[in-house]
Image (tube, rainbow, N blue to C red; front, side, top):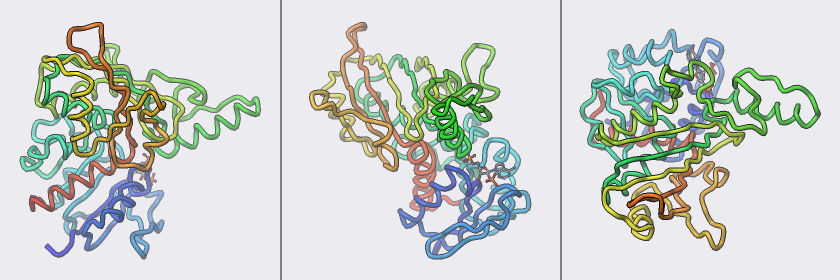
Length: 341
Ligand code: A2P
């Protein structure tokens, strides 16, 4: 294959923008690039390398000439168009929650379970942002000491809710400073200077009291780690940070693992960077992770309340490793193994 015919669905969105950027940065061997979004964006021109590509209306798009299609236009659009794209011959890498738990759809973090990619029926799912960074940090510890139970609290930035959500935060900050009432559209409450224990903004709560975001963390972690007995409990919180998700992760391991050994295995794991020097106040921060590819881990310390416990602090750029980069890495893996649909 002398280049890949590629499509980015949701190219105008926050993740789509990162997909375009990352494919250029990593010199993904694109033969022909196509962008798709809603009818609202039809005809808009967006940069690809040294030229511009006109955005197509997804509703009218034909995927017969597409080898790889990266979808990031929301679960509704994926449910409606991704199967069609796969049937027309494209291998779809889907960033939405539409197919993640389907039995015939691999859910992949390339550093963790690349072997799952080959068993696909034309669709490969990208995990949720909060799952990707947590599992990247858990995997080396799991392999070293086994994991019984995880207790996680997330601190998730507004960019995870899309471009309009970032605009809403910025507008609210201005309004708040001028003593005006803050308008809420995307979020159910004011997000400026607030923490909201509710992600996403609509259809959030299930009958069990957990949000869909929280259930994603549980179910996706078990699927990727291939461990149905892994105990995971979680609280997901939206915070007024533009980019970069943070997670406080408490881990109960099966065998003892010292913080020093955890640091060692984390340092060796591809894609993870340890930033852990409390004396110098060095630990991962959302703003420093922004625009970076790595998953940052720090505050690695013993949990003295259980026999084998560790606490860690995990931070990553939610639009890059949490979404676009992971999807592009899956595409790169497919190319390397020539498993294009
Ligand atoms: P558009 O810009 O035309 O609305 P974000 O997560 O930043 O809000 O981005 C969402 C992405 O999903 C955008 O690219 C958006 O395109 C796209 N999208 C939203 N609704 C549709 C739709 N009905 N059909 C195709 N793409 C859609």
